[in-house]
Amino acid sequence: MNHQFWGIVLAAGKGTRMKSDLPKVLHQIAGKPILYYPIKALLDNGAQGVVVVVGHGAEDVVRFLNDAFPGRIEIAIQKEQKGTGHAVQCGLGAITDKNSSVVVLYGDMPLVEPGAVAALLEDESSKFSLSLLSTLSTEPFGYGRMIRSKAGSIVEVREERDCNPEEATINEINPEFILRLLRFLAVHLQTLKATMLKVSYC
Image (cartoon, rainbow, N blue to C red):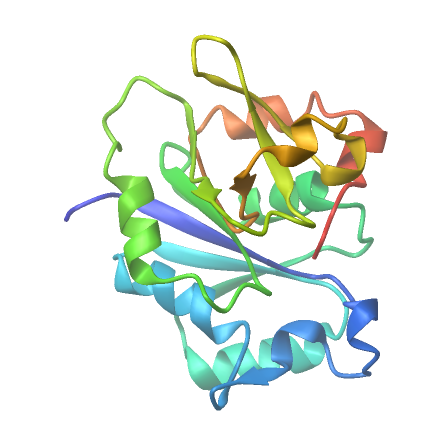
């Protein structure tokens, strides 16, 4: 596989639900911080570079990155946590190859496997400017639902709180950890409204 792409890993969020002073992405699973796994998945697929967007607990997160991946990670600072769209904008500024594809992962998703990134990259030469992975779940509670048109195309990812009763029964969900976005990303992120920028689970 010879795909030219950069990775952005979103790791700026505080993680208030963890009820811990330790940044959420530094909590350990199987002996390694959560943040280790999405970065490893990107590097295992040959990413040209990986940008980690940091914010809360930035010093501790950067210290871990320097120890675990010396010389392999670019750092972007999100001074204000304004949401996912804004975090990606921060990460784009650190990418040197403006013609590259970009894989965006969440830093708090340790179960992402290299094979999932590989699957996303398989249609690298397709005509689409944006690709994403969805999954079918027997327990979709808490996840955004994939809303499809009658023709079968995905037209919206709707958060569970916004679903009507029929939509809530949809078992195709957005796992919220992988997107592949091409160079049009920088332009289209500028069109996000402020209220949209604040939607984030980091």
